[in-house]
Length: 123
Image (cartoon, rainbow, N blue to C red; front, side):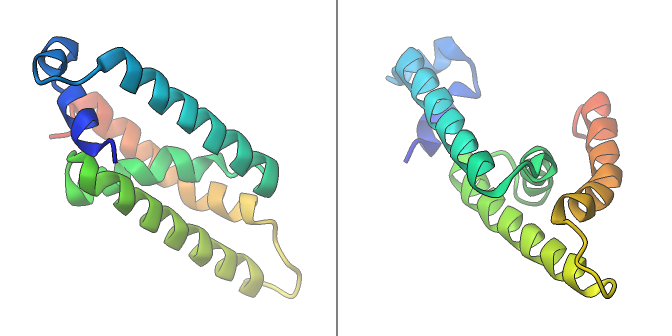
C-alpha cells in the first residue's frame, strides 16, 4: 500500500515531496500503524523482539531495499523463522523450552552479523 511512498521517502524528504508524496502524513501514518501493530503483537504473544530487529535486515540482504518487496518478504520470513524456532523449542528436549530463549540464542549471532554489516555500510 505504502511501498512506493516509502521508496520515494528513502531518497530524502525533498525528493519525495517533489514526487508528490505527502511526507509528513505518510511518516506519521507509518509510525502510528507500526506502533499499534507492535503493541498489539507484544500484548498477545509476548516479547520476541529479536524477530522484529533481525528479520527485516536479513530480508534486505536477500531481496534488496525496494519496500514493495521487502515488507511482505519480511513478514513471510519472520513468520517462517518463528515457526521454525517454535518447532525447535518443542523438539529439543523432553520439556518445552520457552520460544523467547530459542529466538534469542538463534538471534544473537545474526544480530552481530547485522551490526558488523551496518558498520561497513551494507556493501
